[in-house]
Amino acid sequence: MTYILLAVVFSVAVSVLLKLARKHGIDIVQAVATNYVVAALLSAWLLGATPQAAIDAKATYTPLLLLGILLPAIFLVLARSVRTAGIVRTDVAQRLSLFLSLMAAFAFFGDTLTGTKSLGIVLAFAAVLCVLWRKERDSAERSGWLAPLAVFAGFGAIDICFKLVAQAGAPFASALLASFLIAMVPCWIVVLARAVTRRASVTLRSLGFGVLLGAANFANILFYVRGHQALPKDPSLVFASMNVGVVVLGTVVGAFGFRERLAPVNWGGIVLAIAAIAVLATA
Image (cartoon, rainbow, N blue to C red; front, side, top):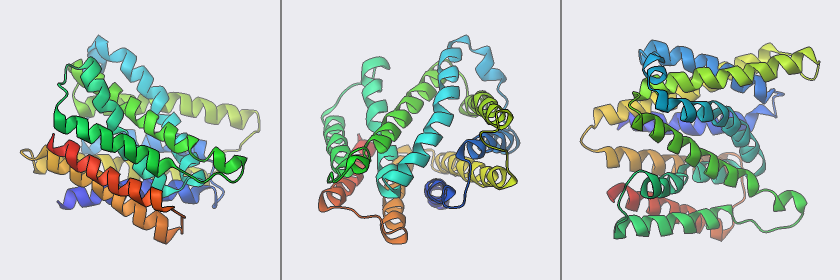
């Protein structure tokens, strides 16, 4: 379980870094662009990944191109979400995105809807509503639920794209590296365009922050994969431990480390989220 604990820590670390980015004057676009360079290099080095297997499977082209757009976009949405809605809501929304990928499994991948899965879906849906609920005071707070909702939808879409790539026969490591390389391209085009038009100069501070972000992002993925490899007969245990762990640690860090305010209904949503993950893990 050491691998899962490390995966949980690095997953929450990504949210913490994004929370701190604006405070320290980080250009998040430059950081995200650098993140994908670091993640791609680490994928090739530590996972021995090459993009060739994903490239050879023509059915991967569409989902990989979508991933190239969705991956950098979700980082920008994550950054906005942790800033406006907080780490707690953002991490819970991210983990509950499994609700969308599960619905896609029934609709497009031939999965069977059982009573247990139905219960998990109902709990997940209720959890999303409770966690994202905010008492509206002004226009800024009224828009505070939009970013975590986008996180919820974005991560669900990313998971579906990875399922489509896997269905086409591409190994996970190959698909991961290919998606990082594709995502890198639009990111650096935007970075260079902003630099040329003098909208945002490239700074070592932002690039260095991107290295940290990329290392944490990749470490989260690496240790999650290692967790599945260490417990090949217990995928549900790995799945549940990872998701519940992120919800719990994210709640502790957000509520107590950054003093994020949560209403009783939000705390209830966190409990429902843990219950939904536990139910879906046994389905």
